[in-house]
Length: 401
Image 1 (cartoon, helix red, strand yellow):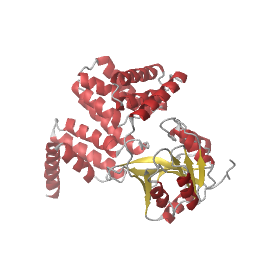
Image 2: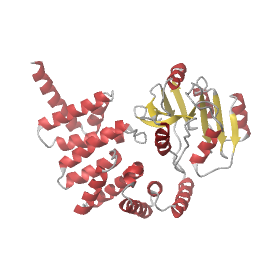
Image 3: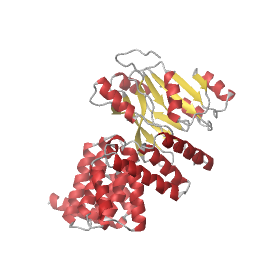
Image 4: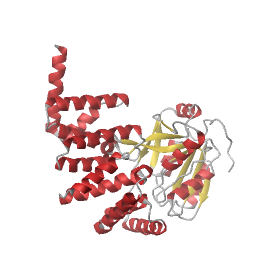
């Protein structure tokens, strides 16, 4: 499809792929009805056939019925290929878009030079918790969805940023939030089907770290621990042979390392060379909370408390700076800080105070509030919260005097 080059306009298209659950489709369409000038619905075999086609006609949507494809990214790209508007918004069929002022979003996309926007995504069962996900993208920047099974845009965005000569490819758009209405847990047959597809991909490309990670995660959901452990080991073998992988696939490496650390913690076995190797890999990559917390616990167990604290600070910085949209706030921010404060509390009170002040500075830079973090600490570690509260009161009191 030939799309016009140049400055983007404010026109937005909604792209949605249907599988075997379409009860929320009306809610999803209604939520963007005042924003999207164009709607594309790809029915991958489970949307409901004629009723969905009739509903699509009511919204003047482009409707495509295609064979089911195990590669979700391929289905998303089918929708993208139909888009005529300058921007495409991707919505899951179990989600809605909450916006107060559609005009503000249209103005926003008309005046940004970025090629993609990260939007807050809020889970239905955790309304106070959100992460950032890339769902809104320019259609004239050559972006395509990537990563079979678990689609992503990360690699495509970075390549397009370099091609377009941009310093930054993404913005964070806080004017709208995608809210999940909840989706049933995947059935066993769906997980086993995913394993078959992942193993097929790995037969073709055994160097794919992300597929080893996805295989391990899927096997864990099936409680097939031997298969999960084997996938983690195979994935880490790839990392050991290819030193560039931690930079190229930080998401997958973080996941594999986190699972491996969990295994070490469960066995309470921390070989010195293994721990040092994990720490070295962390220092070469964007380590996040999914990796830094279990590794931090191991370092604490072997007497390397300062290294453990440093890891948590780095994870927090990466959470805010490097589009950690695959991690929720609790996993990417709250848990690392809780661990850092637990370790620091064993030291002098002045050390814990400095740590609280340091985190407050990070929050200020990223326009975040301290209160939700302290509420999390109070819920998880009441005694630690009381210690922090006491230190803050004493020091605030001395400053007032």
